[in-house]
Each structure stands twice: as structure tokens, then as C-alpha cells.
Image 1: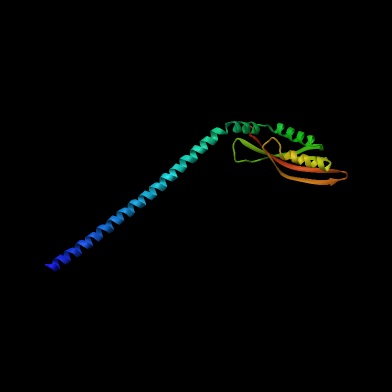
Image 2: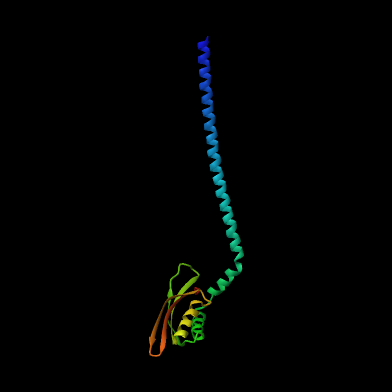
Length: 168
């Protein structure tokens, strides 16, 4: 009888250990599921937060976007006159706008024009002209500029890229 009792207790102990192992597997599976669900929820929350931030930024920059569109709406003639006036205001003399060539852009509503500007004057006037050309109230960049000394005057040759609205 004691032997049957011992075997029964052994079987009960093995069953209890099996139940504990099964319970541990269930808890581990639930924990893994909870962790992945938590990560998905956090990711979704971040996505919604970023979308809300983007909508807020878009709505908050309405005035700036309108100003940018008005700048890009400048014609090539207005851009050339602005460039020429800036160089003359800096004190440079003999300001000339040379060749202008259209560059291809990926945007459909924009075109990019490369303009060559030449001017002469004192070193201070020519450098002031470069500074003004760099800060024009146009969407433009100075691609290249060259300063050279000839006789008593300095000579500036600069190439600017101006972004304009595409011709319709």
C-alpha cells in the first residue's frame, strides 16, 4: 500500500510540475502578446501624434506659404531688375546682366533661371554687391562669383540661380 501511495504522490508531483510548466508557458505567451500590443499601440500613438503635428504645421504656416508663393510668382524681368538694382545700390558701376539660361527643375510649376551679372567698382562696392546679391528678396542662390582687379577697378562676375513660376 505504501508503494502505491508513493507512486500516486510521484504522479501527482509530476502532474503538478506539468501544470506549473503549462501555466508558465501561458503567462509567457500572454506577456509576449501584451508587449507586442503595447509596442503597436505606442507606434500608432506616435504616428497619430506626428500626423497631428504635421497638420498643425501646415495650418500654422498659411501666411508663410502665401508669401513664398508670391515670391516665386516673380517674372524673369522683375528678377533681373531686382538684381540690377541691388548691384547698383551697393555702389557698383557698369552693372550688366549677361546671359540667362533656363535650367530644368523637377517641380512642374517652377523653373530655374541661371543669370550672369557683371559689375565693376571699388573693392568695397563690389563686395557689398556680392552681399546684396546673396540676400536678394527672391528665391535665389549665388552659384559662382569671380573677383578680378583690372587697372584701378575691381570686376565682379557672378552667376545666380533664380527660381521662378513656370510660364504657362
